Structure formats: structure tokens, C-alpha cells
Image (cartoon, rainbow, N blue to C red; front, side, top):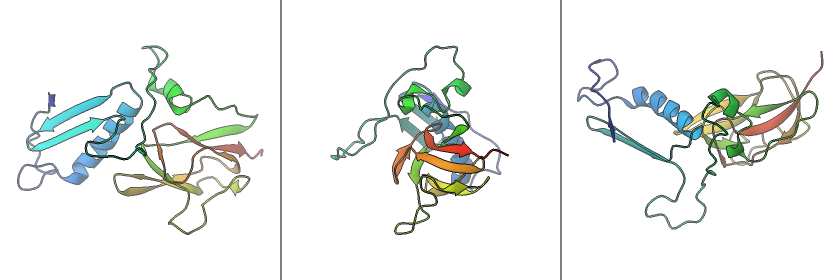
Length: 183
């Protein structure tokens, strides 16, 4: 159990000494990102009346469903490997993806649920073989009830979509393969 020192700044707290959700949101996102790129399975944080427990994998207590997503546990190749080496080609994300010349991976910038369309019943933002422009929205990742648009990092054509609609994704997980336009 890690106990955080009390934060005496009054600007991020409500009147009762409890950090606001907005103040915690960014810190929790960063914790989730770091945990998803490591072999840590459980983390407990406590600061005053606020307690945060993050558990990786497994079925939540009281849940009798077999549909829980459990990410595979594969430690990094070496302790010296930095986070940059884990992004986009980590064994945690499945087999390495073969890319043709000019193709690049678009990876998840956060942990959450990937959605291919703006809302249920609407067509997806992109489909395989669709052209995309730099900065064009290609999907959404819902994280902590916030919808985060995922934008193409280059102009080109979607050659493969590697995730399904409403699928949980991890930080750095490949989402799509884009064939870059040649200028």
C-alpha cells in the first residue's frame, strides 16, 4: 500500500480536502498508461479519504460473466528495454505485424474501448481501402467516460483495421495500418 503525502494546494481540491475528479483524471490516465506497459498486476494508492486500486486482468468480484477482457501477461524482453521499445511492437499486443514498404501503424494513445463510428447505427469513420487525410478522425477511444478522437498521423490509405468495434485496447496497441501517400 502506497500512501501519498497530503497535497496542501487548495486549487485542485474541493472544500473538504478531497482532490477533484478533474485533478485525479490526468494522474489516473498516466498511471493506467504506465501499468499497461509494465508487468505490474496490482497497484493501491491512498491519499486521505481517496483510495485508488488498479488491478490488471481477472474477472471483477461478483461478476459471473466470461466476457471479461484479460490482457496477456508477457514481460518485456529485458529490464533495459525502454518504453519506446514497447510501443507498437510489444508482444503484449499479439504477434508482430508485418508491414509493406510505406506502411505505418496507427497505435492506441491510451487504454480504453475503441469505437469505429461516432455512435451506434452510424457508419464507421473509415473502412479498409478508404483514403485518409492527415488529422482525419479514424475512430474513438473511450477512457473514463470521455470520448477521445483518434486522428490519422499521415495522409494515405487504410490497408488494414486491426481491432473491432467496441474492443478494449491497451496503450500502444496497433489499431490500423496506413499506406502513406508518396509526394
